[in-house]
Amino acid sequence: MIIIMEPSATKEQIDTVVKALRNKGFRIVLNQGDVMTVIAAIGDKRLVEPHSFQSYEGVRSVKLIQEPYKLASRECKQEDTVIEFSNGVRIGGLEKPVLIVGPCCVENDIDGLLRVADAAKEMGCHFLRGGAFKPRTSPYDFQGLEEKALEYLAIAREKTGLLIVTELMDTLDLDLVCQYADVIQIGARNMQNFKLLKAVGKCNKPVILKRGPAATIREFLLAAEHIMYHGNDKVILCERGIKGVDNTATRNTLDITAIPVIKKYSHLPVIVDPSHGTGRRYLIEPMAKAGLIVGAHGIMMEVHHDPENASSDGAQSLPIPMFKEVAKHLNKLIGRIDYDNKHSKEGVSIV
Ligand code: PEP
Ligand code: MN
Image 1 (cartoon, rainbow, N blue to C red):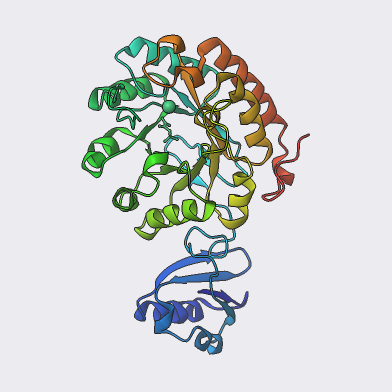
Image 2 (image 1 turned 135 degrees about the vertical axis):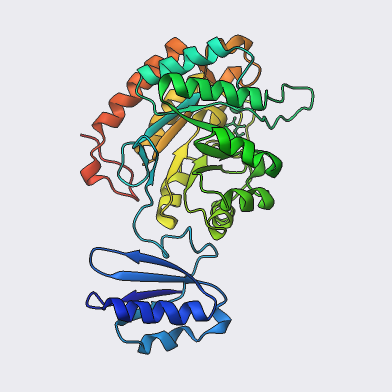
C-alpha cells in the first residue's frame, strides 16, 4: 500500500502514520521527495483496512500497489535508484552508463587478467568482471579457480583501482566472495535460486541480478523483490538474453525491449550484457549501442587477452585491441547522451 502525504504534512503526522503501520507488522519504505513524502507499506493487507489511513491527518491519498513485486516497483518508489560505490562511481538514474568488462572466467594466468584490467582502466571502465565459480552446462568444462581467482581479481583491483564483479553460485561461498567482491553477480541460471537470493538479500553488497534465460520480466522483478525483501535494496538488473526461436544465428535473443519495460515498472538500475545475449563477438558493439540508446545504465562485456584459447566463452569475448575500439565508440556515444533530457521511458536523446 502507498500512502501519499500532503506537501504540508508535518514530521509528527508522518511519524504517526508510520507508527500505526509498523504496529500492524508492516515494513516501511519512506520516500522523502522534494515536495511530498510517500510511505510504502509492505505487509499483509488483510490486517488493515487501507482506506482507514485516509482519515489520518496529513494524508493526501492511499492506494494499493497493483504489481506483485512491491519494493522493486515504481509504484513504491518513483525516483530511480542510484547505487553509489566506494570510489564514487554511481549506477542508475541519470548517471553516465558504466562499462563492466573482463573475462568470462579468471584463468590460471594473472598476466592475461592484468592486461585486460589495464586496458579496461585505460578505456575509462570502472568495473572488472571475472568468474571464480562458474556455472557450466557441462561438468567436463572448466569450473573456475575459486579462491585463487578471487585473489587474482583482488590483485587486479589493487593495481588498477577497478571494482570487482564476480558470481556467487552457492550460499556456502557467500562470506568468501564477500571478502573479495565489490559487486556480487547472481547468474542467469540462479535467478530463481531463492535461498541464494535470500542470502545476498541479507548482505550489504550491491548485487547484479541476471535475467533467467526463460524468465518473464515479472519473474525477473519478483526475483529482485526476494533480494530487496530481505533488506538489500542495491540491486542492478541485467538483461543477458533469453531463449529465442533461433539458437544457431545467435546464442540467445537479447531482449532490448526489456530495458524500457523494466524502467517503466521498476526504479532499479538496469544494464545489458551483449556477450551472453548474442554469443557472437561481432554483435557486441551494435547491441551495446542499442542498449545505451534505449537507456541502459551500463554495459557488461566479456574481454579476453587470448579469446581463441579462453577456457570459456571465447567466441563472445572481445580481444583487447577490438575491445579498445568498441569502448572508444561506446564512450563517444555515452558522451553524446543528453542527460538533462534523458527520458526514462523513451530512451535517451542524443546531442
Ligand atoms: C557470466 O556472466 O559469466 C555468466 C555465466 O552469465 P549468465 O549467468 O548470464 O549466463
Ligand atoms: Mn561467460
